[in-house]
Image 1: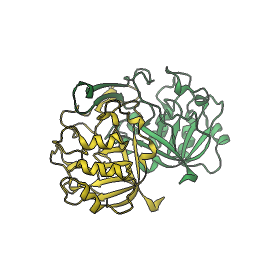
Image 2: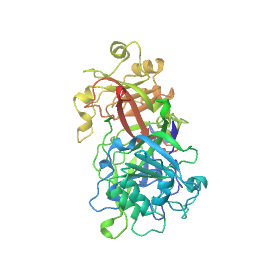
Image 3: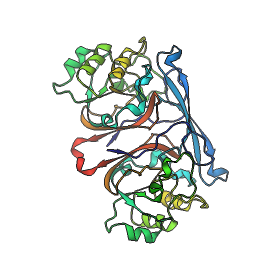
Length: 212
Length: 212
C-alpha cells in the first residue's frame, strides 16, 4: 500500500492566490480541557485534491456527484519521461493499446520532485487540450497528475480542465508519485463527502494488485 | 461498495461547542473568475472522523501516526440491539469467538437514526470503559461507532477514549450504519493527511468481501 498524498500542514504550498492552510487550537488539553480539538481553514483545492465539474463549469456537479466507483479500481501509473506538455501524440506513443480506465501521469514534475519543493513552481508539466480530448475519447474515468493542475500555469480558461470535467472525467491533482514505479495498481482515492462543493482534498493510496 | 460517511454541509450537526462547518466562495465563476473555489472552515472532529491519540492524551500522536494498514482491511459490523451502554458483558455475549481486528458498532443509535437527526442528541449509546478495555485486551485495531463519541455524553474525562487511544486503537466516530447489515466487510477509512493534528474527517466505505 503506497500513500501518494501530499501532507497537509501550515506553510504548505497552495495555488497562488488561494487561501493558505491553517489550523488553530480550539480546545487544548494543556489548558485544562478534557480533549484537544482544532479548527481548520483550507481551500477546497488544498494538497492532493479532487476537482469537481463545478470548479470550471457553471451548473456543473459538486464533488459528491463524482461516483466513488470511479475513484476505486485499477489504475495505470504512466511515466511521461521528459515531455514538457503532454499531447495527444505523446499519449499515442506512451500508452498501451489496452488503456486502463484510470491514469496517473508521472511526469518530469516527479523527476524534479516539484511536489516536495517549499514554494510553488510555475513551469510544471500538464496536459495539452489535445491530450485531454484524447483521454475523453478513450473513455478514461480518472486522470491524475503529479502537480497542482492538469492545465499549464499560463493557460487561459483552463481548457484541459473543461474538456475533462465537462465529460465527467474525475480529475485528481497533486498526486505524489515521486516514489512510485510505473505500472498497474489499485487506486483508492477518497474525497471528503462535501455536498455541492467545487473540490475536495482527498487521501490517495495505491495497492499492489497481486497483494489483493 | 457502501458509503458510511456523514455528508458535510453548512448547518450539519457538530459536537456541542465545536466550531460549525462553514464554506465561503473565494473565487466564483459567476463573478468572472476562471474557476470556482471555496474556503472551508471546520473542526478536526467534523462528521465521520478519526480521533488521534493526541485528542485526549498529552504527548499523544497525531492522525498521521495512525497506520493506514489499520484503516484498510476486514471489519465486522456488530449489531448491539437495544443495549443502552455497551459493556464487557455485552461484548462477550455478542461477539464471536474469533473476533475480527476491526469492529463497527451498529447500536440503538442507528435503529433510532440519530445520525440523520438535524440536531445533536445527547442520549446516544456508547462504550462503557469495561468494553473499551476488553477491546484493547483482545487486540482490536479499529473501533467505530454510529454516533459522535465512543464515550457517553455525560462522561468525565473521556475514559473509553483514553483506554482505546492510549493503546493505539484507531477510533472512528459518527459512522452512518443505518443501512448496513451486520456482517463482515472490507473497511476502507481514509483520513486527510494532516500532520500532527488531533483528528480528521474521513471518508469511510465498506466493500463486500466476495466482490474482491
